[in-house]
Length: 199
Length: 225
Image 1: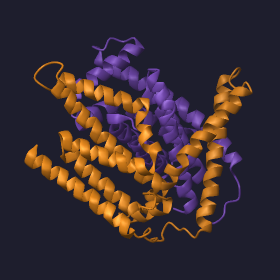
Image 2: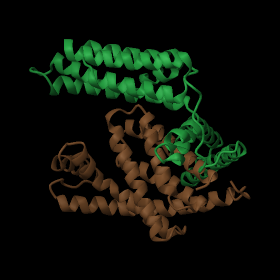
Image 3: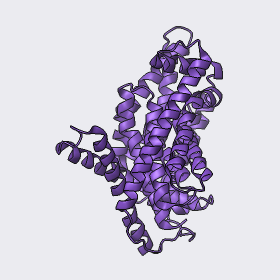
Image 4: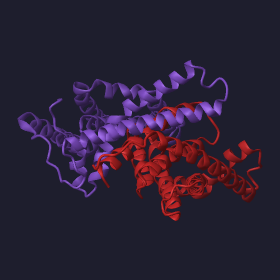
C-alpha cells in the first residue's frame, strides 16, 4: 500500500467518524428508528466510494477500522465498544462482498457489499450484546425484536415473522443504498481523476 | 507539559489506567484528579470536552443505574457511589487517551504502531485524528452553502446526493494534498522511521512521578482501603 492510498483510507475513515459523531449523535437524540441501519448505509457508502477510487483490496476494511478506532475519542460512554465491533464487522462483510466480485466496481458488487453489511445489524444484538457484553442471548434478542417489531407494527411473539421482516427490510435498504453508493462513487471518481504522482 | 513526547504521554496513559482501574474511593479520586489535572495544564479543551451531552448522559445514567442495581436498599447511596467510580475511571482514561492522540503526529503514530507491525494503521490513525476537525468544518460549510442557496428546498434527494458528492470530493482532494506533503517529506510506509524526541529531565520526572503515584495509590488502597 502506498502513501496516497493510506492517506485516502485515513481521511475517509475520519469522514465516517465525523458522520458518526455529528449526524449519529443528532439522530440518536431524535430517536430515529433503525438508527444503526442508516448510519451503516452512510458509513459503508463512504468506504465503497474509497474502494472505487483506490481500487486496492483492503480499502473498505481499512476505512472501517479507522472509523471504529476514532469511536474511542467520541466520549460516548459504555456503548462505544459495541459500536466499534459493529463498524469493524460491517466493514469486513462489505470487504468480503467486494472481493466476491474481485474488487471490480459495479452496481451488483456495491449492492452485495452494502447488503451484507446492513444485514449484520440484525445479528449484532445477539452476538455482541448477548455473548460479549454478558446480557444473555435470549434477553438481548427479545428486547431487540420487541423494539424493532413495534416499529414495523408486528407482534414480537411471532419471532420468525419479525426476524424475516427485519432481514427483508434490510436487504431492500442494502440494495437501494448500494445502488446510490455506486452512482455517488462514479460521480466522485469523475471529479477526482487527476494524474497521480507515484508516491 | 507541551514538550512531553508521545512515548512519555503513553506512559502516563498506562499509569492512569493502572491507578484508575485498581484503586477505589478517595484513592481513585486522587488518581482521577491527578490525571485530569495534568491534561488541564496542557490542553484545557480536552477536559472541557467532558461536558458534552453524550458524556453527561452516560455519567448520569451510570450513577442512576448503580443506585438502583447495587446496594442493600433501592435506591442506595452505596450503589450510586459505585456508579460514580465507574464514571471517574472512564473520564480519566478517556481524557488522557484523547490527550495522547491529539498531541502526536502521524509520523509518531506510524513509529509506535510500527513496533507492533502495524505501521500503516498508526500513520492512518494519526492522519485521521488530525483530519477530524478539518473535515467537520468543511462538511458543515458545504451543508450551509447548499442550504443557503436553497439546495434542499426542491428535489431534496438530488440535493443530498450533491452534498455527498461534494463532501467526498473535498475529502479526497484534501487527502491527496496531504499525501503529496508526506511524500515530499520523504515518508514511506515501509521505512521504519525514527523514535520521537527524547524525554528530557522534566519528562523523565513526570513519567516516574506518574507511575510512582499510581503504584502508591493502588498499594494504599490495598492496605488501608
